[in-house]
Image 1: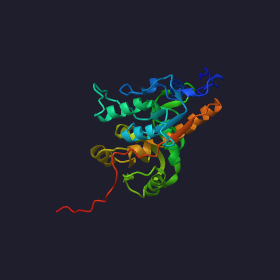
Image 2: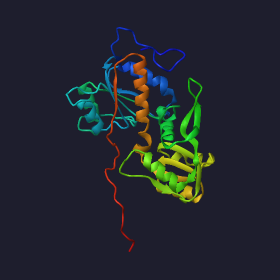
Image 3: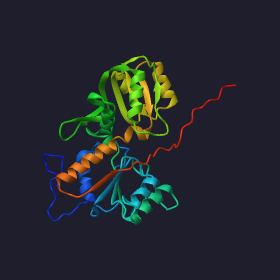
Image 4: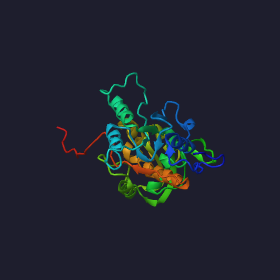
Amino acid sequence: MRLSSHSSEPDAPDSAQASWRVGDLMALMESWYPQATAQSWDRVGLIVGDPDAPVRSLLLALDPTAAIAEQAVVGPDSDGHPYDMVITHHPLLLRGASFLPVTDPKGAVVTRLIRAGVSLFNAHTNADVACEGVATALADLIGLRDTVPLEPCGVDAEGHEIGLGRVGTVEPTTLGAFADHVASVLPAGPTGLLVGGDEAMAVSRVAVLGGAGDSALDAARAADVDVYLTADLRHHPASEHLEGGRPALLCGSHWATESPWLPVLARRIRAAASASKVELRVEVSTIVTEPWTSYRVTQGELA
């Protein structure tokens, strides 16, 4: 596969090439989510695998967990033929590792994938900031219009502004009604959606940031939005923010606010493969990789 100098879409492969290889998909992902746009602390790219290995089946998932590795090795048809490649959002070895024995959880994932010949690639903060990345997918899911980055960081090769999060508008509503809408479209998980603020307050301008969003609380306030949707908000930052006024807060789960990007990525890859006349099976894992498995309403009283 070749990438043309004027387009981020792949040119048709040579007629002798029956399928893409891992390296072709790496080049495609680089064209959409350049590694240079990832945060300095991040780890993105090919984690395990051979760039020359053919790819006829591809699995997309948020986390490179043991369950995802098992799904990849079992394969799309449970017939003993694994997926050729897995692309995840989160890295497997963000903090590095000195030892990866099979007795270690991450070592077990690496060993399982290598033994089965499955390549593993990830796009993390470079996918967060991209024009058609994680933030845009979440904004589109909840119906934001006229969106711009919450924290701009530059422009892409086609001149689109990129950055963390998105800010946009919705039809005027109330916080309570908007929270109901968000809860109805976020992927189902065990933790639901937390609401902080007066549910009768007016909402028309919204900020979103998939995944952990503590760091952008000040940016959301500076953007003059009515509500900020994110995940993983901690007690003290959220409490202190709400004491200071708008925006109200909606806190979903990390998995639920980032996984909407996976179907978007699947459609992009399928379209690119079709344009290049390449047969490629692309599927999105439906495994919920939340660390939590269930939810209980707490009902005790302070003595």
